[in-house]
Length: 156
Ligand SMILES: CC(C)(COP(=O)(O)OP(=O)(O)OC[C@H]1O[C@@H](n2cnc3c(N)ncnc32)[C@H](O)[C@@H]1OP(=O)(O)O)[C@@H](O)C(=O)NCCC(=O)NCCS
Image (cartoon, rainbow, N blue to C red; front, side):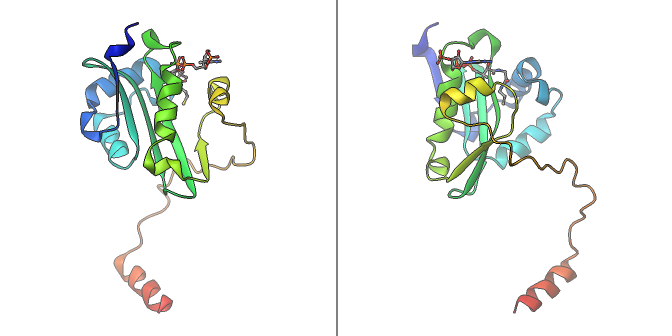
């Protein structure tokens, strides 16, 4: 593989949502069938968002959400099957970790039970203590404006 033509980008604007959808339909069992609209929401609310390119072809992707100091979580790490096994996956995760939003974070989480050996090589450890999850938030309606106002008054 010619590494000279492989580029890493941290620009949200570079993401081609159609190629992204195709890459995840191909290589990520957990994200098959995600819509373009939902992908654009996920990307808008993530930082960093790292993409990997072979010229015009999207061949890798990873994103994270972070508070910048205490906690961050890495999501949706994928390298195109034709490009796996060449060190790109580790470089992708390292690029996420070296982003200014991630560098100072005390704990970086990874929501996966797959490919653990790959992540262990980068320095992640298995953690069985953080296992609670809420799958569906449809029971939680937004607070009406009035209630927010009352809460703000109570806070003084
Ligand atoms: C996981 C994934 C991103 C790894 O990308 P990659 O480019 O193949 O990984 P690398 O070539 O950088 O591998 C780095 C090291 O991890 C090892 N590794 C990679 N995948 C592995 C696996 N499934 N099991 C064990 N070791 C693995 C490599 O052998 C290499 O070891 P080395 O440094 O001793 O040579 C890629 O396989 C992928 O996209 N898989 C499908 C999607 C997925 O499962 N994502 C992770 C869940 S969020």
